[in-house]
Length: 215
Image (cartoon, rainbow, N blue to C red):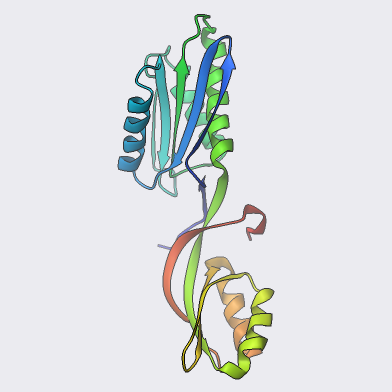
């Protein structure tokens, strides 16, 4: 089955804020499996074992097939659900968010808790950054030395990333291109080289691409 683009967190990060003397810390981490999400949760619980609550949510799978959340002792529906709703609204998957609370002595009420935990989730996502993981093809491409300047100039305007370039009896490029851009790129390579260059596709993976460049 063909891979499809999905959004996820770009890095492990956190940020915090205060609401009526309660300290909230929003943490996020990209996680490709449920086991990784549970490991992250265990790590946060250990790190903040003196906290009043460590509420969480995680979504796993490019199609968001696994969704779990917990209020961790807060009134039902006031913590875990708001966290996962923020994640769903941002269409983020393969990610886990933990919002830690140190109670400050002032009750927030159900509505206040929902707002605080929603803010905690948004704070975590903003700290981590959200990017688009695109199905991406990796290629090897060999050319002769007389073509190197022409090829380098050509590649500058192509939707590809050159990961490596080696020099032996030929010049070998290792490059990646989003699967959505693949057919057009291969056709333009063939036209530019009069059919003498045939990139060899050897891998298809998910890689992050800038969201503004999404096709």
